[in-house]
Amino acid sequence: MKKYSLFLSAIIVLAAFSFPTQAATIRGRVLEQAPPHNGLTTYGSVTLYRKSGTSWVYTSSAYITTTNVSFLFQGLAAGTYYLRIEGYNYKTEYYNNTTVYENKTEITLAADTIRNVGDVYLNPLPIRLANASLSTHNVPAAGGRVIATFDVVNDTAAEKELLVMIMLEAKRTIQNATIVTGELQGASKSVTVPAHSTVTATKAIVIPETVPAHTRFDVNLHLTQDKWLPQANPEFLGIIYKSP
Amino acid sequence: MRRVALLLGVVIVLAVFCVPVQGATIQGNVLEARTPHNPLNGDGRVTLSRKSGTEWVYASGTSVDETDTTFAFSGLAAGTYSLFVTADDYVSEYYNNTTLEGERTEITLAAGDTYDAGDIYLRALPIRLVNPTLSSHSVPASGGTVRATVDVVNDTAAEKTVLVRAMLTAMRTAFNATDIHSMHQCGSRTVTVPARSTVSTTISIVIPGSASPDVDYNVRLYLGLDKWRPLSAPLYAGYIAKRR
Image 1 (cartoon, rainbow over the protein chains, first blue to last red):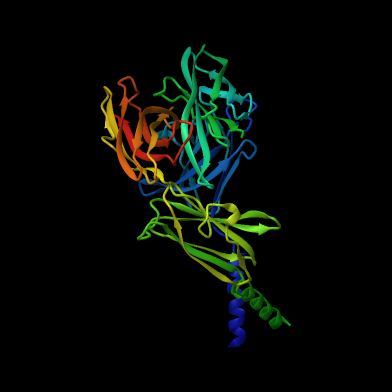
Image 2: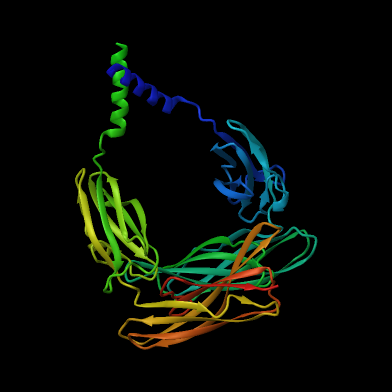
């Protein structure tokens, strides 16, 4: 009896570790639409939803970067799925190659199947910022100017009047160890960009002497048609630090 | 021989799952300093650092909130640890009851020890915003005004003149499925608050008729001595939708 129990225990343990799972897999890659189909210049995500009755339920997410362009969803139950693919400052798509939710392709998986959806290509937003930089990351105690330089890209067939707002997130430490933050507009610039063109612009950010030492500013560019109509997501430019 | 092998297999599996880990534990509770020591008004974070030579190295972090004020770090190796406790609009503290890094209490643990840090009390920031409200969460297509009302608390012994600013995050969906946003300032108010007093103030947010109906706005309130010198964390006041 004792021998039999031991044998049974061993079988159970082996079964738990050795039996193949009957789970399915979806895999693919996310790349830029334009040849040579590089990885995205920013980052993105792939979100998987599963059909449950008449509704769709979030199942899992995978993150992609410039260098890690592949996604893999493993251990999936048999069923029907769809994919939503997002990239920061790229047009969001549903698999397969549509921005319209109703036109998405449903992926039906049987148990233990592997579905390679191949390369998913994303288009950058047609109006966007690129190549942003700051002339320096430090200003002295007396205050100073930092020059922000950036490209405004217009891939549309019409000239665009745009507003670039330079927003600063101020971070400082009070009460010895408490970090407090505030958001402020550091400067703004109107830019006219002809159709299918890129315009390089600069704007000075003036940090006054009254700013306390050790204050750090995270600088983001916000691209809008006017301040009420955003055209792209903010572009991080870098930090400015007020020296003691 | 076969029986011995089976027995050995079972013993190994049992050993892996059943032998207790000699990890140590630090536990405690985070509450407001003011009696009756309610839970924090919002989320807080407890960060555990471990001493490595002369350096302090991040070891783990956990959250506390209004409903669960307790924390526990378990499975810790023997060594010396410290705790740092933070929350929006509270003064950050090192255990035990100091804002100074150099005065923190070191917790030395042997294997298997359990250390109860007891109740850790956080003080609210002495100057802060509370009770934000919006007069409405929508404006008509022709535009409109929404009033943001907030209390400015001054727990210090001196009168304070502060700047309260309302910032809008404009959010819209472009190209069917792409979420984009930008931020801008939409109103501000200078407020003088007597010592140990609270003053209610109102900022008018004007959404113009020209603003797109496809844009929603998140409203956050910022408190500073001026726009360059924040005094507390931003406070979410609500959203405003533009009706079609």
